[in-house]
Image (cartoon, rainbow, N blue to C red; front, top):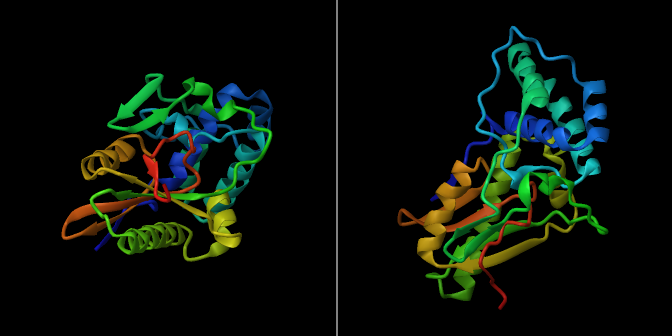
Length: 237
């Protein structure tokens, strides 16, 4: 049994909020954003948001620019009211305030304040899909099978949100799909995995899940989520 967190209804607004939040802290990107996005229409209802989780912010100007280019292209497929709402989200978003360290069992989240997206890296981060498998699955072949199924479920959900077109995938997911499709697998206890799913959902972070006999066995997390999110022990260890 497969289950995927819905991406169609909210994934564009999620990106709009994240880019708007990133623009608050990056003047160069803010200028770029305002040169491309129409002024917010005050008659359009402001989209509700509890703030963008730092783990979903772009890491630098180039990543933000790529996501914005993709988002504006996707908004062309949306009805005018939805497009206007996304424009307003781009201009009015904010970063969610989180504790410096959020710990969920041994699954930790390393958050460096609300400016996580401004961290400069010498080397561009590769697009990697990460999968967490329950440690209760002790058979290596079964763990590998669950990793494949979770990754497939994640790809399916993103293709669904992109209308079935590879060319409309989010930039990091498109890069992953069209290059070497690198996947990293991790293990954690069954109880920690059960806690991780609602935590990701509450944080507004996308994921796909695999169940067996109504029990969560694996989660796949796309490369749009920062690798500052710690996911247990690498499966190869």
